[in-house]
Length: 156
Image (cartoon, rainbow, N blue to C red; front, top):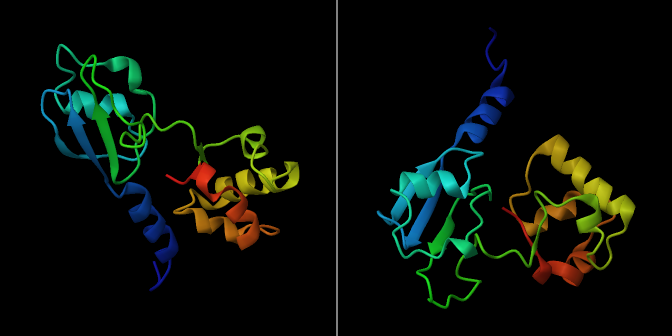
């Protein structure tokens, strides 16, 4: 292999294999910070945390959600009232630009079918958006467009 050959591929492999660090709190056997792999789900980190305690309220946790770096998962006890913004695994009222379908993206003000398809296409070709402002890389999407829906989307 010549010097410099494959360096882009190596960087991509390093980024794809980088660990995901997740903070698990609440009604689990062993709350704490856990290192997980890309593609792992909430159920995987809860199992790693020893599982739920007896009086855990598992009705409010999305066990199928894919983990992302710096995610906080809070499992409340039965009868405990929890603000949904605290638990990112329960925060389903925002559209995740890294997993939303064309039709979901089209619900955002200023995003029609062409822009929604461009977002999905960009994501498929370049990988996930690191933050909301990465949408500026999409032709036809500017600061004003993003400001129309910034509070309605997340990127993880």
